[in-house]
Length: 187
Length: 290
Image (cartoon, rainbow over all chains, first blue to last red):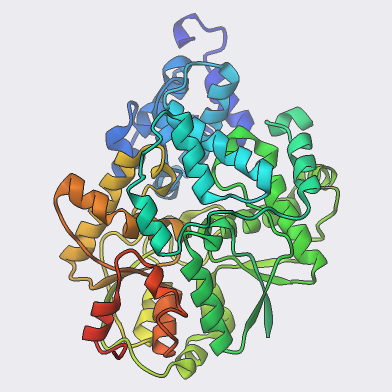
């Protein structure tokens, strides 16, 4: 998977380019993205390292990193990049590529939460916050996580117990049925 | 004047007070809101990589529903909802293949007639500071406020203010008689998207934001995002347990601060719903009476 034994040394960079139009070759390794990244202390690869690894076609460590999952998509890196590379957009594409490649995911919990989130929309058309958090806690084997917040939030009227289901559930089901996981599949 | 409204999922439960206070302050200024009929969740961030088409199809349905109801202008108070509606509206206008594909998925065509507004640019452009001032009956009496914008100004499709040094909220606070404080953490991320799955990261970020606010001498924090609010407000107990600092800084929605100067009721503005209760602070500053 690294450039040493690859046919095309630009393959990884080209994959990113064709997924979202961002050209990683332009990165000059100034490190501004990493310097401003609020999540960098918890990341196993720093944002500028991710870009460098894409440049040298080293796919596996990037797709297996925790970085691409714990990136909060706050867009600070994208706003500050002197080469105007939309790094947050690249992180989003890397998540798709990691799922496609079926590599072990660098932060399982984040993906689990997001899957439950989408499933919640599929069932109701809207998010029911209490149900979402409870389902996530059960699925991640920590049923009492944040339970201490429950009584406070409930007393403040911040937890709706029943949630809302939209009327046209048929149209939501149709949207879920027809939507393709990757836009390029539908072309 | 009637304007379209897309409250989004959080404003139905954890951020109910954002919904209550927005409706109340706009009504004071003669504006009524009409919800997009039977709106759905915008898909937030999870849809982006889990299902690309879904991420654009969900907001697209809302645009179609708004258009069907004749709503040519829609206010979305939640930054994520706002960004999604605006972004999809723009993408559909410039990409005919995407437009065609979305028409097939959703089963209806969007004509591109819905203008999206966030609460802040709606207040600035459609209401104006003068009309806002005309609606107020009292002052924030020099209340020291730091405005926290989070990632709002950097989200895709959003172009309402400077991305890293926004001032829209600060201007409103000044107009209300408060003292807007310039500070370091206006647009630092609160980590809300990780608040459930990687709580320790969100706590570290919230701690640094609260610390910066305190250092600057802020008496409260003003916000415009349901996730920022719950993260900054409800996590202060956890912050105390982990870092040993008891901040007790109230986090109010900008709409609640506006409502206070319009002399709207404490409960009417949902101020009783905040975890860190601002009652004592507001009494002490003479903004509310016993």
